[in-house]
Length: 151
Image (cartoon, rainbow, N blue to C red; front, side, top):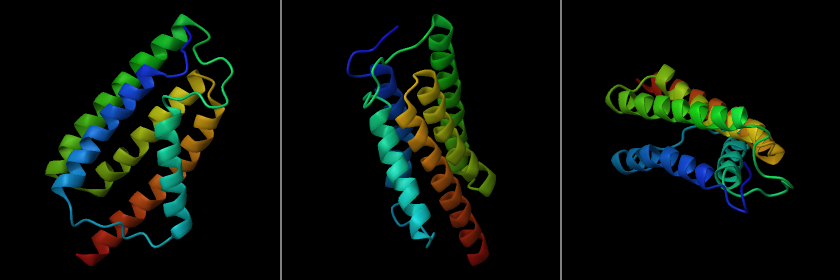
């Protein structure tokens, strides 16, 4: 299976990942990023926005698609399960915030971006997914530590 110049499945995955984040942002308006490491904040943000775009646009990919039906199934089922885990974890986190859940919410999107990039052989997405994973994990962990030390 090959895509044209847009991966609709990737766009839907991004939208489904953004919905709980938008809800969280609306319901927690006063919450700020406490991480003062500007390099890691930069890695997180550049990685995040690049992955969001690269999930549905195949920049620098000459053949955008799957090598086999099995890879397509792994992409669909794997991302579906990861999205389900993300939404469930988010629902629990909204009721009971803790460091473990926050870290889980940092790891799952990174896994989605990595899985998608690897299966689509979209190496630019893989690179930015790694950048995002490192930055997002660090910033999330640092915020959790700083919030915990405040209480």
